[in-house]
Amino acid sequence: PKISGYAACIMEWGIVRRNDENMYGEKLMLIHRGWSNYADMIRDELWREHSEIGIEDFDFYNVDIFNKCENENKILLVVKSWENVHPLMKVIPVNWGYGIPFGLLYSKEPSEKVKRLLRAIKEIKKNKKV
Image (cartoon, rainbow, N blue to C red; front, side, top):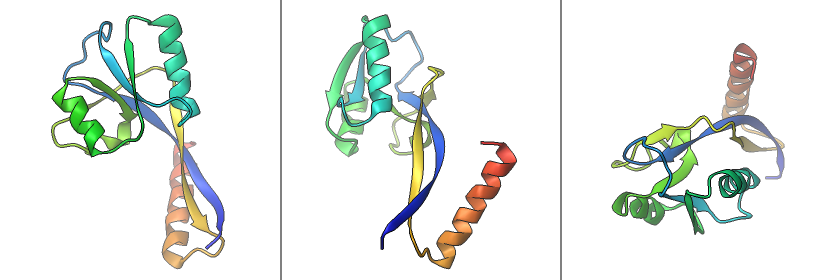
């Protein structure tokens, strides 16, 4: 089916780590430059304003990356809604003033279930003034 649109919201970033101490001297794992303009904005600010935080690039979010973060006690930038993606990790919300758009792509002729979902999203957005 052809894609006709999306319902969007802004998802907040969080970091995965074992504690909430200062990040100076730590390595922050970031998806490689060019994958997301939003992650790139965070990367650029860290390089400019917080060069004491090391950045380690990776190619793709997958279980190996989450395991590496856990096994090597690194910090990983993720969206807050992924808080249950790995049983040994905790997502700590950060208030860095950045978000990432999130959308649902759907067919030009969506099924009745998809239409119900879209109506529910519109109602939630209306009530939350998102």
